[in-house]
Amino acid sequence: MAFFGHIVKTFLETKHNLLPQEPADPATAQEEQLRTLLKTAQDTAFGKYYDFASLLEAEDVRKAYAARVPLHDYNEMNERWWRQQRRFPDITWPGKPAFYALSSGTTGKKSKRIPVTPEMLECTQRVGRAQAESLANFDLPAALFEKDILMLTSSADLEENDEGALEGEISGINISNLPSFMEGYYKPGIEIAKIPDWDTRVQRIAEEAPNWDVAALAGIPSWMVMMLRKVIEVNNLKNIHEIWPNLAVFTTGGVAFEPYRKSFEALLERPIIIMDTYLASEGFYAFNARPDTMSMQMALDHGLYFEFVPHDENGFDATGAILDNPEVVDFREVRENKDYALIASTPAGAWRYMIGDTIKFTDKEKMEVVITGRTKYWLNVVGSQLSEEKLNAAIQHLNEATQAQVKEFTVGAVPTEDGEDYYHQWVIGLENGTLSGDKASELLDSHLQEANKNYAVARRKALKGVKVEVVPADELYAFLERKKKKGGQIKFPKVMTGEQLEELLTWLRK
Image (cartoon, rainbow, N blue to C red; front, side, top):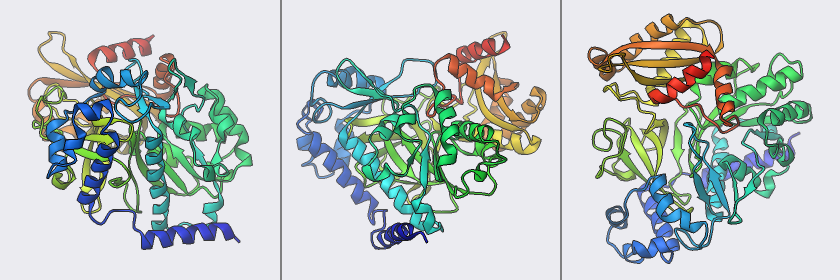
């Protein structure tokens, strides 16, 4: 009998019923988060420069904050403030950060260094606990709460920088700071998690897999599929449930799950619960909290403050650059089914910080959102207005129509030979099956014209055609590996510039 599991399950259900995780008044909760952030940082250099003390006395603190503090992207925040914080304390947050999260990046540029403070780690753990408590909404057996959790992350082997702080990708930092109560359940364990080489780490996971009783998985779906395949191969299995019969939950994140659903489900003996998360280098923002949806509940009372910029002509120009004076709204003013760029203020000293993601509220009353893409993954060179969400939907249609398994893709607008018009160049990474480039071009083009009126208009004007290059998905991962970007948290870019596509295609054709 799962005695301990029954205790944990009963505790979660009781706490969930008595203390629901969502705030009764989201607007008030968000104001409280902002006030706490301002009060904590009012004596920092940033807080004094923007006079946080007087903001706290304002009649409408949210309106006053938005009027006085400008929006910041990474470059602006880093050049003016975060660079100083690496050497001096109390710049944008009290003290100095103990960690820096190196963003994975998708363009080959140098990694960003995002400060991670003890308060930020605590905030992330609070959101993680809230997601764990939401398991009370799911019909899970008590025995599951005694089983192992396998988290597939980037390496936890952090490096010390010149200022004495530790650096690594955010998943490695989080694993290095797991709460003590998780130590008995966490797999593959810190020793394996610290192995820097991805392939070696996955090989060790596969070899140790028979010793674990894994009930829950967590990680980016593309790399999770590769890891599960290795476990199946090394242990001569038909599916992953043969070695982990209690596997019941997969917490996904980092990229949209749907393009990987077929590849993932093909490795299972039976369906499991899929829970989405919104965990970025800058914070843990939302999580799936109930069955029968992939929408995620915003973490509105866990230490973070959010604002939203409409991802349309009121917020961005045609190239995806934010306007000088964009419209900005807070939680009270958002509308359902409208794309917004997310702006966050956090206990890591990020102030009105543009994350780079776009979201939409699917249910404002439940505070639920889905990620629709990246502000820069917005293919609109010729007015086609294709978000990452629309690109993913087109790939899903292609998979269903052809029974192929497209695992990765990228697309960009490339000038025609005369330089006057454009065509869309797709590169598709195929997991299984066969697919001709001409057939893929026809299906993608027809679907997008039918599903997106702006794309249809563009096809009658400056967008003259669609070209598709089909390659094995492993060749795209080899391209990432060539750039030292292979690993648990690395994501293949959904949209590339013409120059990036040329580099990729040249490499593939060699």
